[in-house]
Image 1 (tube, rainbow, N blue to C red):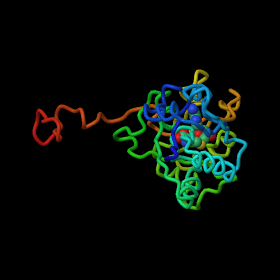
Image 2 (cartoon, protein in one colour; image 1 turned 180 degrees about the horizontal axis):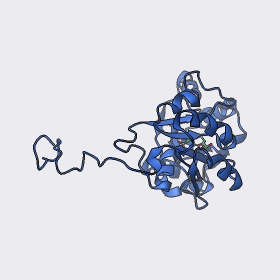
Image 3 (spheres, protein in one colour; image 1 turned 135 degrees about the horizontal axis):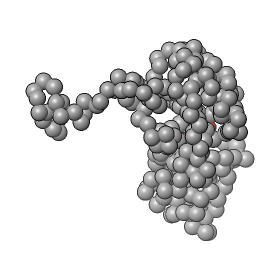
Image 4 (tube, rainbow, N blue to C red; image 1 turned 90 degrees about the horizontal axis):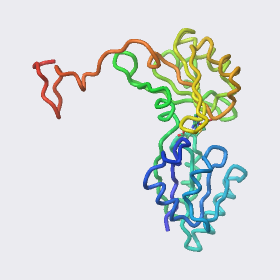
Length: 254
Ligand code: SAH
């Protein structure tokens, strides 16, 4: 019996994948990251399924639950918020399962950075503005490797999405302003896709103060970059003068 690592999505219970929902409906044991997974999503599980909140568990305890359940032939879902590949601490779980000889599979999910872009109704990759998205965090108890510090990353002026840093926004925005400048548009998206979703707009110079005044302390992303407003070039993809594999342009060489 395989263990499934399932991305729960950013919060809205309809933003889990069809496959993730099916696996939850079939599960005997669900171990969920209780600090962020919307409890509404747990309603997909059968009433008799055993639910464990991993917020208060160690890696060893999570593994013990998985091991026991698998040995009893139970179906296990390990539910992570957003997409499991980002800040999910799943590598150590997968490697442990590997060494225990327990098969597993990962079901991706909608990351909160995608839900945040949906909330602000902006595209990260605007032609002539930025074709790169930086997903990062500020250094905290988990260190960030040298070369990935915010002042260095800010020099690319790419579209940027900062995780896990809502309490450090003053310091983070000061560091980012070194490369982007204080006037670059910024937004804080709190609980993207939840009923209590909120978006605060500003610039790198004032977004930290605005966010603090709004009382936002957790479950938020900082978006930074000119993609949030302002001019951009029209795409080549849908330009009538541009030919590509699926459509011939009106003018040759466009
Ligand atoms: N794997 C997750 C990220 C987990 S790290 C994903 O793909 O989204 C936890 C951080 O993600 C939080 O501190 C916050 O910065 C961000 N986050 C998670 N869900 C969020 C949401 N619905 N809205 C805004 N930020 C969110």
